[in-house]
Image 1 (cartoon, rainbow, N blue to C red):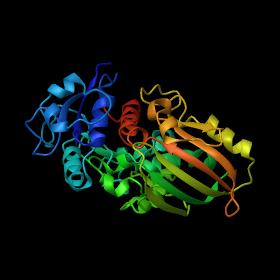
Image 2: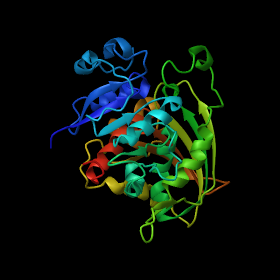
Image 3: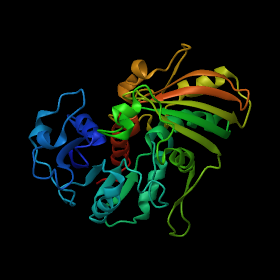
Length: 353
């Protein structure tokens, strides 16, 4: 098929740059608009972006002129990596223009009319788009919080196989999760910051929507999501790691399980993207590492091109039932890569014509 022209909102920021990098030579999507704030608009992307990724700035992107965030009907699909303050207005404007917005920002995640989707877990929730809240093919689809994605991918196979009654999670979140320039070095070197604004609430609420059930409306009524009933307690820490969010997870299962059964559930999980041939889908969404000192950010964050979530250290928990470690790449799986995979699923399911 011919490539779909797309725009990237917030293209000069941390997640925006990662989107530019990952969408370069993408087989389905062609970035034709790199959008940012008015202070960047009109400049070349090379001048405006202050590129800081280790990958080389793509030459085609470097030469493009940055546009403002006004809707442009030349594109049917837009990726949003805007700051939350700007995203609420801009994303709604693009959706009202009949354009599908795939957003990495928090603004609309918990809106009852907006799908909050991890493609392998709840791609069926995209059916909310059939409610046609926005004109034409317009709509907003959201990618979850970066830590939520790693947690829920690890929970989903256990949720389905055994049921889950309670979860406790402690995150150790990389510096890149704060964007660029992010946390000042003097605050993070030789230190751990035991607070990240808004993160604990996201980790305690977003999984309930994602693990919930889509219910089709009766007699022409709009469909809706019935959230899962699951208590989650989260504590979030910023740590001096560049990329890769680690989680220490404890949970109580609904049914008894042996450790080999839990590991098998993780290893066999392929999810709702299996067989769809989505370009960004990892061969294995989850990988269990048996070494007692894994997963580690430096060693494991790029597993599956940064799209595979690594799990390790499964052992009994004297307070709940089981505890284990989780690692996911926060700017790839947890942000840009996850957003691209979500857009691919929207295309495959026919929500973009």
